[in-house]
Length: 220
Image (cartoon, rainbow, N blue to C red):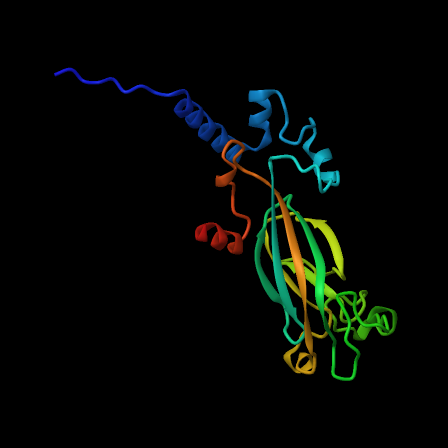
């Protein structure tokens, strides 16, 4: 009884090659892709220049993954974990969507830009400031990475992650429970992460940038 020879299709060969190339790019980055194809993932020879350039909304290359999250930030809570993990080189955009909050019952409600009085502690009493970002308007939306100094967001900010980290957000107020308890309201924000895909030929296998994205991926 003769054995039938198994034929290897072109698609199977391409799939194997794709997996190998993708794995190499994942381990060694863009240099492997340049050596194989003569082209850079970024379309330029210098990756640093590519990362310094603002990526137009309508011209994102196919190698970029864009993920959006809608998150509600409470005024009466301290640092709130967005459950988003960003990687080095990721672009992050945080945009105010809706809602109002304040830093106490006696203060008017406002959006992510902070109190209408535009009170900035740093300009009044430098040594006595207790806000996480004393040179930003009290009540403004702020953010921080796991081990970074906090920074102001307001109603919109676009910035780049310099290392892998979790992302946290809060209201710019004294973040002690006794001081937060008279704060009221909440705002809804959109967080958009633009990250370089790790698998060029198999984008569905690209690294999932956050715990939320992983949950959504597993549900599909």
